[in-house]
Image (cartoon, rainbow over all chains, first blue to last red; front, side, top):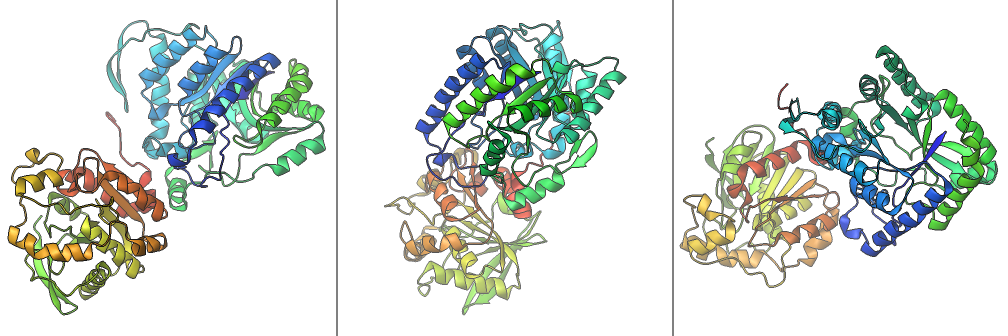
Length: 358
Length: 261
């Protein structure tokens, strides 16, 4: 089992924040933000020392919860400050980006990072549709087309034109191409039927997140079936599972930690927006409809002391098929800096060495 | 789209009304320069029953020496809407008229569906003067690009002289404590628009409305001056229509981006 640490830059607001998304920019404190990014590097140096395989970053906007609106910038900075660890960019929100630009930046980043880049491509969470005015009715097909164009831009040796549904280019011929050939390890992120099918068709990995083993296992099972249909079999490394973990010295300790954590989404959409999204956005798990928005906090699927956690990871390997875990050890923006450092140390010393053969 | 003209009686005065379109009523309360039917009114009339009032003392109406406060003017306009049987309706207020619209929405919350404030003059930097001067000077104050607009009908100097005391009396202080105290209680969904090149009210006033009116929305119309609807009617109308149709869910884009099906 490989392990990735999900880095969110952990902005800890000096004052209470409005509970609504988007959070007004005016309440951002620049000094606190600067400190958060400094702490991030210190934390990631420790993560690297502990032997984590990847550090992952994501793209989220207009909220202090995850302070990485540009994953390209966060990944570049992290890549420059750390030596060995792989940088997993999970991922650029494809439907609201210029896919050619994404392909160029990722290729450049992979080259700058000396081939340490891992890429996840995704549609993005529903609230992100509001960031750059993405029409929910088009999000899925813009994602699929954009992802395909990114792969094409990386691999097509001759200048080409693209006559898409949503994107059109007369000339594409990117420089540099990625250092890792034909391209960095790449995942389609999402549990939807469309995302799994895209990954299978294009022989790339599949990334699932947060759901219980049973739900995400349904998606990875569907992905593997589709891969078989396309005549290939993914390696365990090609299934990544992002999850929350509450790790304690003991099981009681872990449950106590979980009880302290917020059980509500910290920055909710306004009711009228939420209701509209429930009608306009369609989501599914391997074809089975699910609500586009959750009502509470994201679930925590690994809970316990080291022995219990190791048992759960073993079960995850069997039921989800994941060969890479992308973990949050505390909710973004919750808990102090030192608590997270202690959790990292506990994981790095008591869990990590014992899951390598899973 | 042609606007038909009619009149309505309210508080003992005869009020001129310009009307076009069908559907949910959209009441327009004009700025200090008086009523003017612009391209934006025509575009809006494709979606709503647009009812543009000439408020007492403005335009062709006789001098108004009776109305003492903005809140009184709003009450008169509310009665005019009742006389026309508009219930419920949307309200759009421009500049000076945006303050009338705010008072109207506060006085008749159950009747107002939503509120659009175009370059509102209800909150101003201290020492704000009413724009005045010869037509060329007024055009430069009201529009970012008067040269693009061709002939701009400017108010008659006699009309300006008639309305100036009324505007001075009713517009209230730059920061109106009584109004601002009441704004947090405003329940109508509210959209505030400013042109990025407004030379009458600085667009930086926009955030005060956001702060005071819970759940309100602020939109900047790029490269427009104070008279947004006259200067960038398509950009103005698109967001206003979308907001009036969907209220806060208008933040979710429904613009298609398909190039080739």
